[in-house]
Amino acid sequence: VIGAASRAIARRVAPTGAKRRVASAIVPRASADAPPVPAVDIPDTNDEWEAVSPVDFAADVSAALAADKVVILGKRGALRSPGFVASLPESLRTVWLEAVAAVRAGDNGGKRSIMVPWDNGGSLKDVVVGVLPTAVSRHNCPAAAFAVDVVLAGVHPPAHGQTLGIITALKDATSDAVPIAVAVARRFPTYTAKSARGGGRGGVERGRVAIKGEVLVAQVDCGAASRLGSGRLDEETSARVVAVAKAVRHASRVVDTPPAFMDPDALVGEAASVAAELAGNHGLDVAFDALRYDALKAIGFGGLVAVGDAAARDGREPALVHVKYRPSDAPPGSVFRKIALVGKGITYDTGGLQIKGKSGMPGMKTDMGGAAACLGAFKALCQLRPSHVELHLVLCIAENAVGPRAFRPDDVVTPLSGRTVEINNTDAEGRLVLADGVAYASGTLGCDDVIDVATLTGAQMIATGRNFAGVLSDDEAMERACVVAGRASGDLAHALPYAPEFFTKEFGSKIADMKNSVKDRTNAQSSCAGQFIANHLDPGWNRADPDASGDETEGRIKRRWLHVDMAGPATNKDGRGTGYGVALLVHLISGELYADGK
Image 1 (cartoon, rainbow, N blue to C red):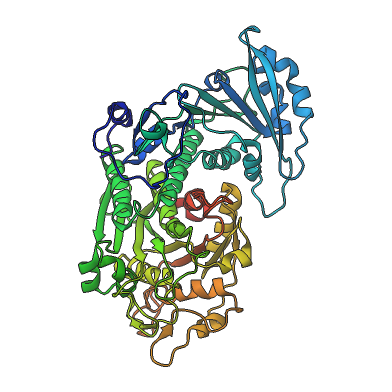
Image 2: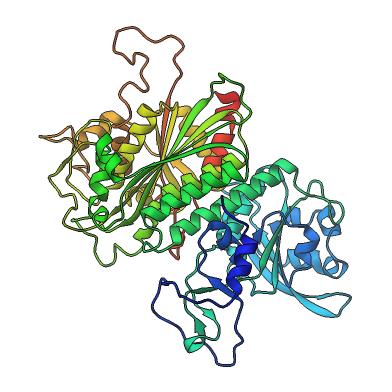
C-alpha cells in the first residue's frame, strides 16, 4: 500500500547521501546568487510525484482567489452570470465585466491579463481572464475544453511557497466539469528530470527534483452560484473530477518517464501499486496477478514472448498483468457484465530488426500510452466504486529491442489464440502483444466486452488526425457510445470503417494463417491493424452457436469488441503524454451503454 506522500516528502527534503542516476547527464549552470530551492530525491511512487507538483482539483473558490496568481476561465455567459460576478472580490468585481468584454475568444479561445488592487489596495494581483469559445463544431466537445490549452499557455506551476489559483466558471457543471478539469490537468504534468538549484556542483543538486507550489483548481457551477462559497459542485461530480483528473496526471507521468526507468518491471510495478492502493486504502475487492517470461512461454503467449525476447535477455522480461475489480457489496452469486480494458504497453519501440531511423525512434517511450490510459481509467473507475460491472485490466507489456534473440522477419509466431502469424514487419509489434491480450480476455477470462487501447498506427493520424482517436467496433451501439463519450469527455474519437471482408485479406500468407502487416498500405491501414487484433478474439466468443452444434444458445449475452487507436492524441505538440483515454473510458463505462449492467 502506498504510504503517506507528505511523510515521504518530509524525509526526502533532508540532505542526501548516495545519489541516484538521473535521466540526463547534462547539468545546467545556475546563478551563484540564486538561492537553493527545496528539493527531494527522484520520487518512487505516484503519490510522491503528486506531492512534488501538487494540484488540488477540489479547492475552495476563496482559497483559489487568495493565491499569488489567479486564472479565471469559462464561456462568456458563465463568466458574466450575476451569481458568479457577485462571488468575486469587490476590487475585481468593479472591472470584471469590462475585462471579459475586452477578450476576443474567436474559434480557439482568448485571454488577457489585468492587474487588480488586492487586500484593500495593499498590493496588486495578476489575474488572467480566459474566455472559451461559445460554440464549437458538432464533432467537438461542447465544453470547448480544447481552448483551455490556449488560456493556460505560458501559465507555469508556481515556485515552492507560492500558489496558483485556477477558477473555472461552468454553465453546466454536470457535463462540463470533467473535460475542463482534464484539460487543466494536462497543463501541469508531474514528471520532470530538470535539476534542482542548490549547493551542489555547478549550483545544482544531481538526482534531485525541485518541489513546486500548489495549484488550486476551483470549479463553480454558475447555475447555482449567488455568493462566495456557493456554486460548489455536487458531491458525485466533484468525486468524478478528482478521480479522473488525478488519473490523467498519473497516466501522463507514466508515458513521460524515460525508458531507462519505465521499463517492463517498472510498468508492472505501477499496476501493482494501483492494485495495492485500491485494495488497501480504499478497501475494494481487487486482485492482482502478473505473468512473466517463463510462464508466458509455457502457457503460449507467443506474441508477448516474440516481441519481448531480445530485452528479456538483458533482464527486461515481458509481462501480462491482470487486475480484477468486483463490486465489494455484491451479494453471493451476483452476475455482472464483465469488461476487459486491454492496453498496449510497449515500454520502448526500436522497431526491432527492421529498426526505426534517427528521426523515427525518439519519442517511442510513449508507445505504452494505451496501457497507461487503461491503468488510469481502471484506477479512476474503481475509486468511483461502480456497482454494475466487473472490471478486468489486462496490460500487455514488452520492450521491442534489438539483440541476438530479437524476432525476425520470416519468423512464424503463434499467439495465445493458436492462429499462426508470419512476421513481415517487426515494427508492427503492438498488434502481436494485443493479440495475446484479447485472446486472454475473451477466452481465458470470458469477458463480455473487450476494449483494446493502443498507440497502434501512424496511419490513425492520417485517418482521424492528431486530436481524434480512431475507433473500430463489431457493434454499432458500442461504436456510437464511444464517439459520444469522446465528445462528452473531451477525449475525442471518430469511427473507422469496420468491414472484415475488405481488410482480413490484407494479411494473407502462404505459410501461416496470416501475416502481421498489410499488403496494401493505401487500404485503410488503421482499420486493417484493428482487424488483425480482432482476428485473435476467442473463436467462440461472440457467436450464437459457440460450440458449432448447429443450435443457437438461448439467452446468450451479446459480446462486443472495441478498438481505440490513440496514436495521435496520446501526446501533445511538445511530445509529452496527455493521459488521453482515461476520461474517454471512464465516461464510456459510466454511461448509458452500461446502464443497469446491460
